[in-house]
Image (cartoon, rainbow, N blue to C red; front, side, top):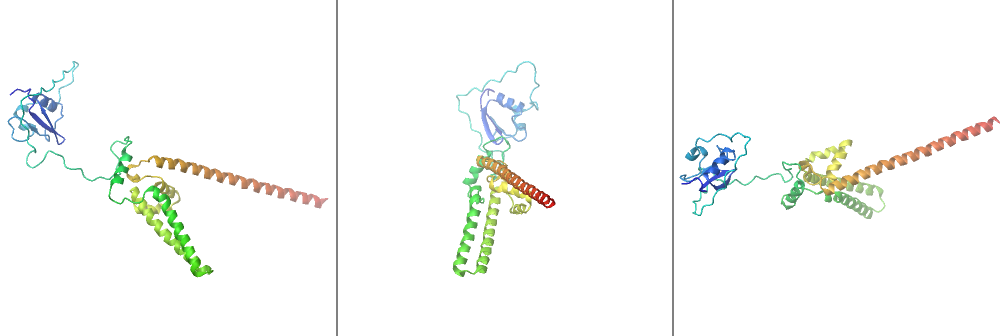
Length: 288
C-alpha cells in the first residue's frame, strides 16, 4: 500500500484527526504535535487504536524535530485525496476509554478567564448569572433603593400607626418609632447579606462597616461594584460611572466644608476684631 494514501488517523487532545498520509503522520510526530505516550493512532492492519510504539511503520523515528539549518525547508506535499473509499476507524479508544472528552465541570460563573485582557469576560459572567436558576443575591440597582424605601415605609408607618392608636401619648409614639427602627435595621441587614452574596463575599464582611476607613471600602463594594466582583475584579460601565459620580460628590463635599469653614473663620475673626476695637474705644473714653 502506498504511503500517499490518506488512510491514517490520530488523536490530539482527545479529538480525532485525519485521514492523513503516513508521511504527514510522521511529520506530525517529529514536530511533536502528537504525544507519543498519550495520543492514539489507527491505520491499515490495526484492529483498534494504539500508541505510537505499537505501529510498525512508525518505529525508529527520532524523538524530536530535526535541527534548524540555514537552507529553507521544503513543506511536505499536501495529502492526495483518494477516490477509493477508505475504512472508518473504530469509534472508541483502547479498552473502555472513549476518545471524546468528558463534559466540563461546573465552574464559578464569575471566575475571570486566563487572559485578563479579554474585555468580554465581565459581560459573559453577567450573562451566565442572568441565565442561571440559582439565587445569587440582591443586585446593585435594587440595593440602591430597597433598603431606603423599606426603612422609610416601616418608620413612617410605625409613627402613623402609633399616633393613631395612642392619641397624644409621647411615650407610646417614641417606643413605636424605636421598634420601627429596629425592624428596619434587621431587614436592611439581611438585604446587605444578600448583596454580599451577589458580590461573592462572605457575610462577615459586614463587620468592616464598624471600621472607619474600611467602611468606605465596603461602601464601594456594595453600591458600585457589579455582581461577582470579588472573583472577576472588573467594573462595568455603570460601575465606572458611579465611581466618577462618587469622586465628584466627595470633591464637592470637601469643597463645601472648606468653604463653610473659611466663612465661619472669617466671621469669627471679624467679631473678635470688632470686640477688640470696642474695648479699645471704651478704654480710651474712660481715660479721657
